[in-house]
Length: 87
Image: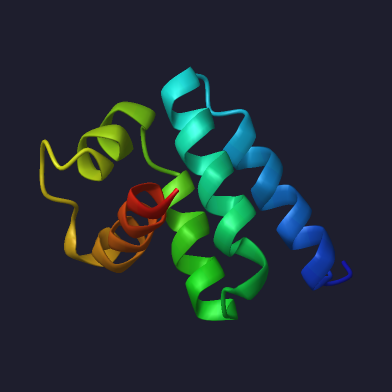
């Protein structure tokens, strides 16, 4: 099996961000990927991809600060919140 190229990974993560299942998450994550995805390090992309594996309702509550994000997702959630506040 061949390794995924960086460009293909960005495209795949962008698509996963756009097709979440809830409009609110589509909008929030599309804005985030437009602003930040291309500049994230490999480790940050890993963290973002792990966040995308979570349930939309949970992610929304973390981003809207209704509930604290798990420690593993806190840096990514904080980055998404910062992008949302500036956009």
